[in-house]
Length: 127
Image 1 (cartoon, rainbow, N blue to C red):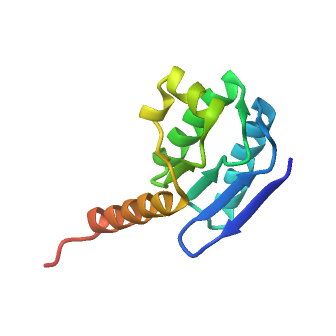
Image 2: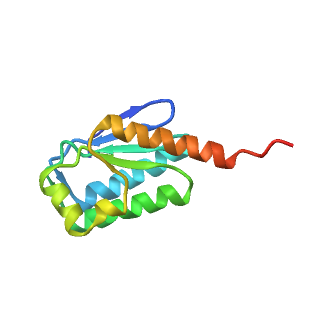
């Protein structure tokens, strides 16, 4: 599968190039994220702008990716969702469970705020 990956200081943007977001692509995306975590990338924005279709099982995999990220104290935001992909997420009410941002700048804001929250709440109180 062809992913465009843009690594920044505090997050990485992964953009699948396929028009259809299939179960195979979602599995490969999850594997790519796991490998990137081992290399030090922990927060991800998944840009689904190129995707016009999504499999039902791939929709469920988005939730699994989200749960895996947050169980490790990392962030994950989906952006660029439109058309049939958005409809599929709404049908299963997935958009209520995972972080979805309409635009990239909003996805970046979510990641930044969650990093700030983790830094604030993980900080030791002054003595």
